[in-house]
Length: 251
Image (cartoon, rainbow, N blue to C red; front, side, top):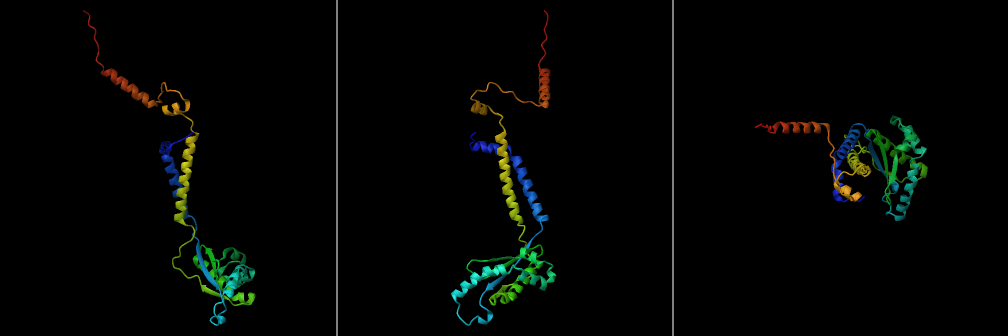
């Protein structure tokens, strides 16, 4: 069954209300859930730099080999920061956070940009203030503990998570959710429309009979509703009443 552009347009025109209904229901539902039911998640982050110790800064020029060593050390630091040695210390020093070491390991995300000496710590939580407190606590404990673990003092805190009066949640992305819902529901509605048309094997026009059967149409029987019979009977009666009477006169 080959369809041209006109056939596709006819299918869409015939199912247009079904398509509109599906898209509207899906989009509105997604919007309501995203704006009123999904709990917002906030994100706080800090940045650490792997660099020379404070007492060595300025004593010598930047050595490219030292920079490369620091960059390679970042992978080691990313693993150390997630160990119980650091997380247990955070829990012990900051009981106000009300979080366990295991939860901290799952909560704190550590990343770094390739070929840089900067590490980024990220924490997401329903409360921005709590997320900021957690990530700041982990960063400071790590900075204080790494000289004891690695016997080097090359971690500096670039910036802490700041207090924000009106933080913007990172999840859910409400507008993006609505846009995705619109696109997906539209594709689904179009797919359903074409599927229903594909499964409908009825011949509805003279052109379809000629196209698929190769036979001419001799006659067509119109499907009538009960009210059509009533209207037809009424019109017949009115026609008969309006006809002139023929009187036969005997001579």
